[in-house]
Length: 290
Image 1 (cartoon, rainbow, N blue to C red):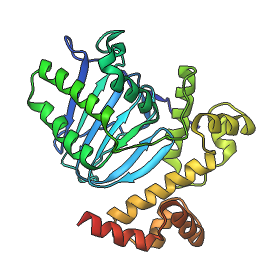
Image 2 (image 1 turned 120 degrees about the vertical axis):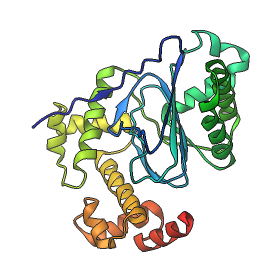
Image 3 (image 1 turned 180 degrees about the vertical axis):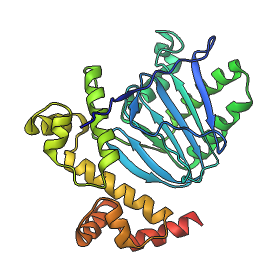
């Protein structure tokens, strides 16, 4: 069995810069679609479109674009692909001390410091904040480096004052210990991403990270606040949501393509997860996307 090396992403700002700014569109897409992590805080604005949101042990489906703030060393996947249908994706990376060790300790930065703390669980912004801040992030493209720096501070301050947000790993996600924990969890996440359509045995996944089954189950629950079975099930259900929205295939096909081998179990699980059965979900989403 080939063990996939977990992805630590080294992000180096260009010489003379304290942060990185990247914009992706149809001609230049963000290829980082495996689970990865980095010490930098990441701000992402997806302009339009719909797709998967995979941050820590949280997995969900977004529509009409996304605005996300991801805390330091929190594992996540890329948010767009050729099927997402978005106009563009803008990504800003910054280290928590990118303006010096003590800058965010001054009184005026209290809201931003608090925002960075909350972002350890990943934050998705919605409503007026998503629209307003999304426009400001898009405008970074036309600014000088100094203007960008001031604009990023202004954006972070506005996000710190916003009430239009949801913490994605609200139950907690703890990788405060060592880098090897992050490496190990990335191996697990990337394995699920590659094999969720198949049956995944606990013995197989425990062996992958050189642990006994009971040790692995305790370890996974401690870090993610979810059982491994629940995590895999949610991954499959969000993939089913994506298929229902994007592909004109039957609900039976959606069930089996998402890794479920029992249609009634799929229907029941999907309704518990989304509050709707698959056909209701698909019909409502068609209305939203129109």
